Amino acid sequence: MNDKVPMTIGGHIAIQEEVKLLKSIERPAIIKAIAEARKHGDLSENAEYHAAKEQQGLNEARIAELEDHLGRAEVIDVSKLSGDTVKFGADIVVVDEDSDEEFKYQIVGEFEADVKKGRISIRSPIARALIGKSVGDSVEVATPGGGKSYEILEIDYN
Image (cartoon, rainbow, N blue to C red; front, top):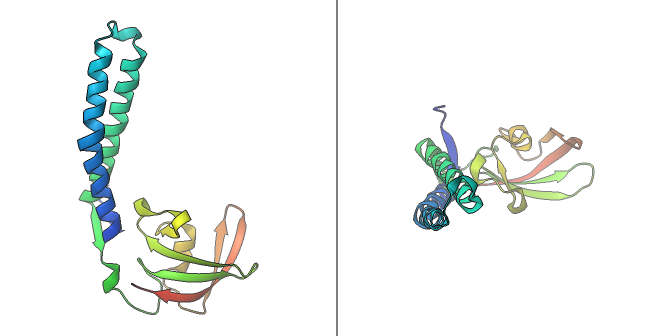
């Protein structure tokens, strides 16, 4: 898959730091655990050894996944964006037209999304519904709990 992966500068830095942690801290700790487990004798019945090898596989898979994302990264400097319509990197304030509850979201790359922090993936249903819309527009979003209707109150790029 050669698709570009959009991400903010902060998301790119966070992925780089995770790779560094996995390589410089986790990998050596796992290698040490494998070496310790080997000292316990018969590897075919050594649960510590098998657990450490499994952890090694998971760690290496995560490193490969993150390095793939970095290799395909399209880093977007949100501070250089502007406009009156919603696009990647936008901070958006919406109101649920049924409950009058307001939500603030930033549209970010898939691998830096964190709903608890108000960071939603560009591929999420709500982000896809918001892209290209302006303040005052209403959008319909299909959610697992049923359809939701939101009105866009603010769009900001910072």
